[in-house]
Image 1: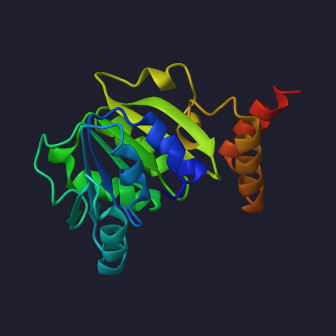
Image 2: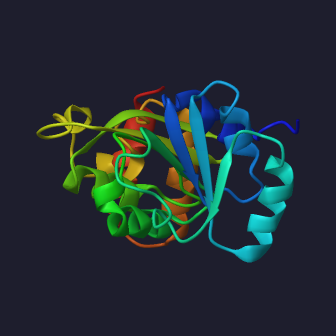
Length: 202
């Protein structure tokens, strides 16, 4: 079986299951890897080309492959966890919002760009940060249903939502964020915030 990328492996490592759905499964490698240890794995792909690729990759496996948009092919309560990788954060946010009534307790997300829209959606919809990591150039956000304010943000300024409150001690990640903000060429409170964090490493 083909190996997962480091980012996809980080997603797989955080999935609790036991019944899981991977939205936008593309080549099908992540659900194929998960089906060896989970009770049930569903893979959803919207586009015909990737769906056919996944169908060939998953042939003979226990993965339940379905074609459809977002959570449309699912029934409420059918899964315990969900992953979505390789999409923009806004697209992930929108598919979560559209399928809000079908969402399971755990969401493991790997947006292709800044995860701020995902974090903000989570805070507004009762999901807490269980874990975050930065790997393979992208952030993996692990969310769990919670009650009340997310304790991950307790005592932190609002800029922490942009960088990720659980990533504020990751020097290389913060350096990349600083470079990006400096490239904007305009004053930004987030830039001074990340500079202060980086100075604390010295």
